Image (cartoon, rainbow, N blue to C red):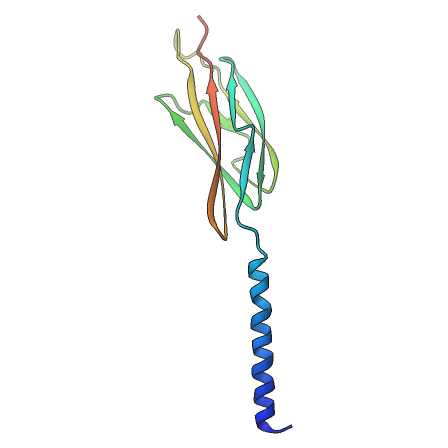
Length: 130
């Protein structure tokens, strides 16, 4: 084989190898995450709900409180891979006589080739009883 043929063969093989990489990149799924149900109403006592988080990758959870009260929600898993059942617990809403209902969001997010996507669980806890 001549030197010129060896160079052409090497270039050809390099191009074939590069082209083989492109379809692999296109086959990846974009990031996706969901939570079911997406909204819950809990009674005023100590209570919890189990939700299903479904994700194409590793997800994380963050609690965002609405109003002056915070720290009343706990999440059994603040991160995890793929799909999982997560328990969201609320402490009793009895801090003050006639305490109003309270609200928070639990935001589940994951990042993939399309960027970060989020799914939100809206949590409302009923007003304290007299």
